[in-house]
Length: 117
Image (cartoon, rainbow, N blue to C red):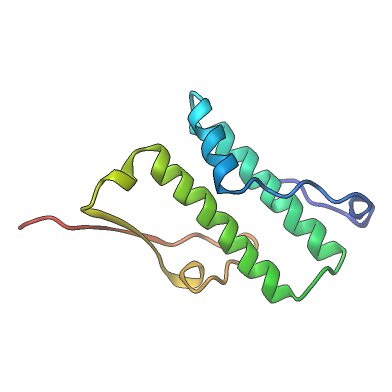
């Protein structure tokens, strides 16, 4: 994990890609893992820079971290074709479900399936 120092605060890093760009990268990649890793690194660098430069309230950064994970998970869900399955739902729970994702927090997910017993 890369930690930023005050010296890194001079030039802001590029923000993580938005959903359209991430989906394009996932579609073009043989494996989604490097794309996801690069996205998470960009998200962390962007949030760390915002924190070090005091660009807004901490609550906004916590919400933006959750939003960034939303973009990644939705892209991966789509990449694997799970968005075509009407019997599955991906649900965020816990702090992530409340859009309160702190650094180093776990990401609690529930995959709900509609199956007949």
